[in-house]
Structure formats: C-alpha cells, structure tokens
Length: 125
Image (cartoon, rainbow, N blue to C red):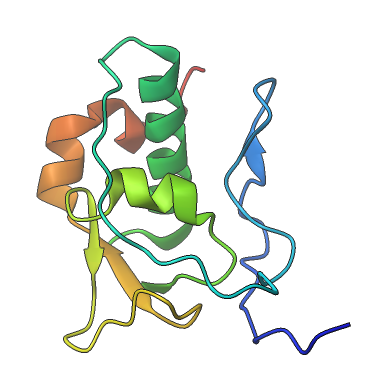
C-alpha cells in the first residue's frame, strides 16, 4: 500500500447525513493526491434537500469547532467546497488548498446569514 499523507481524523465529528449516503468525513487520505479545496458554485435553494445537507454540515462544523480555526483533516472536500469562500474561509495567509493540514475557519457573519438554522442547538433534519 502506498504511503498516504498524515491526516487528522476529527473524532466525534458526524461521518455524514443520516439516511442520505452523503458523507461529511473521509476514512483515509486519497492515494491519488489531496483533493483541492476551492469554492464551488452552490445551486441549492433554501428548503431543498441539498440546502439541508449544507446546513447540517455547517451545523456539525459550528458545534464541533465553534469560531476557532480548525484543520481540514478528514473533512470531505466536496462538502467543504460548497461552503468555501463564503461560510468557511482560509484561516491562514499561506493557505494550501491541497493540504490536509490547511487551517479553515467559519465566517460566522456569512454563515449565520446563509444558514441561520445551523446555529441552533439542535437542528431538525
């Protein structure tokens, strides 16, 4: 087996959205290389299933990390990319989008504007 890069596993972070097959974390580093973090257009309208998944992921991020910077680690790039550049931003000047050690932070103002439900103590899904 190839030597995979080190990757922090965020213990206690939900692995995905129940009943959907959508993952929030990955099990192991990608042997083909780290999937880059980049802002992707979000087409999910409020009330849609996709919007609820984005809101649930942000809810998990907020309740796990709060306003503090956090390491990308085993967080799923596809999910992060839908929030990146808006609700989740780089937490360091020399941000490396292809590093599992890249530091991110929630832009609380933007996140509360887009997904106010993510900041509730309990989120109905």
